[in-house]
Length: 308
Image (cartoon, rainbow, N blue to C red; front, top):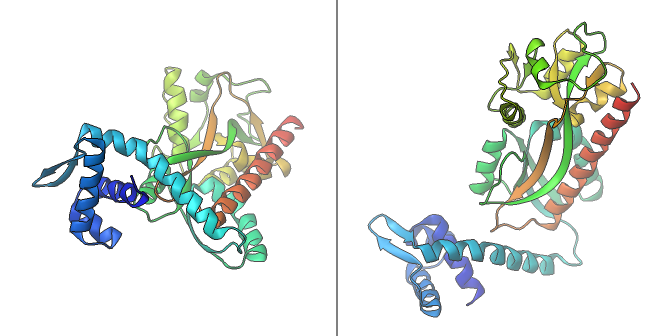
């Protein structure tokens, strides 16, 4: 089995058409068909069924795809590492970020890259978790930082940071509920402002509450976490926000927070990218840098929470 056969097989599986796969690989169709036939002969198994609608993977084809993707990813990453070894970090990085990562960490990361790695071109977009996942799958983005609410078999997922969510009020809020952990059932009594149900953070909150047999019906829904934090600072409204979003407000003495009763709510931010597109050295450096800045914000929030 050759490297190009792995690449051809994965591309044909993804495209479901010899014509489209050959165009994507920039080869002629007979060359692609010949390599797939060699694979099938080597394994003694039919990997695709030829149908009027295209190439339909057999059960053996599905299993081969699951086995080949990690192998192809490792080979591509090894090749890229050899090419980049000893050279200046450069190239283009196309990344998607959930908004909380953008507002808290991105400016520092961009300053680091422009000062230390000016040869790197960076494209950044923000969006909802599912939209970012779709953009990575469609190869519009090299990778994305998302709220990891579920397992994604189609992408490689690497943990970035974990953080707790807290009940957040302004320092003069008359709805402040005390110092001890707040019971989930008591959330319904508060004037809550939360992200909409499309937002990854809201999906997480609703999932945990559903496990407690509860459903929240907030009177206000705002998808911009920075806007929620600013609104909560100067009103009697209450929110449930991640540590990274409230660090600055806690440091300024404008917010007060309360933990939730067990099991609490914990957010997992992950970096996702395609098996077919290993992270370049520039992309890995970007992920490491933004992870460090996010972790610093989380640790600051935990510190100020314990000293208020």
